[in-house]
Length: 200
Length: 200
Image (cartoon, rainbow over all chains, first blue to last red; front, side, top):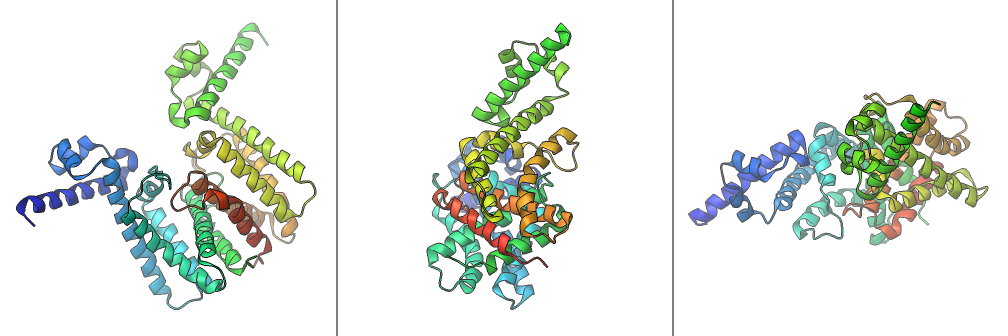
């Protein structure tokens, strides 16, 4: 790399670091170009020289969140050892709950950021998400060996969405949610029920 | 009522109407006292003469949302007729999905509004929520006649949260969600699985 490319790569990291700290502390709404430029010691223009827009910077933060959350989920699975598939999904879901509880704003930023299937999601982002989803798909394939890949994908999304709903309303102590002390129990209930289900 | 009380009650309705229209069209963030005062033809001070703060006004809008959503859910149940408890929950969940799809901003306002069990939620609001939750609790009591009321409450919250998660990620077409065309199928899968589960 040339010296210019080096400096550009270094500034890119500095900006993602700064955005990551802000997301962790105050969430998505705290990301403002002027503040980030000040923190990184660059001009506002320099940010847009590196990122197309602030959305691209937030995607880079979310990619780190995927990596950190994924590492915690994989560690929890390794600690659990060789357990049956339903139990493996429960371990994962509890690690997901723990991550969301420990980093609520960073976790919410994965979802608050308006990104739908209709928008132009970069391939590398979908790949990172796909790697996390594969962790859920693997035990589902063991549980339902006859299910087509498309069916496994639906079950994975349905089950992830269910656990996400329980975690979301629970972590934020919503009046409609499951109380914190009972979250693991209800997550286990839903995963066990789905794992024992007969597919039609 | 005195003429003053009449005028006050009329202005209260006018303000809730205006806030309701704004929530329906643009969501929670569009609620600003100055705009509402202009629309209702009153001073900003007059708003705070009626409502303690804008949160109280939003609660009044949410109460109407509970009533309207509840009416649609009850109508769907009436149309379904005398069906088994799991099927009744599926009918309800689909009506919930339909309501969220048709009124996404109004529906999101029920949840975006930061109100947790730690905050001071008025009794009348909890009562309205409780009436909706009772619709889910009734079929659960039929399915699990030996379960204690506290257990039924947990199952109700866990199942509501699961369906809410599927609806939330699905209606907003999130990359992690169930595709729209498959939402009813996955909602039915989760509810059927939970209904068939054995309680320990």
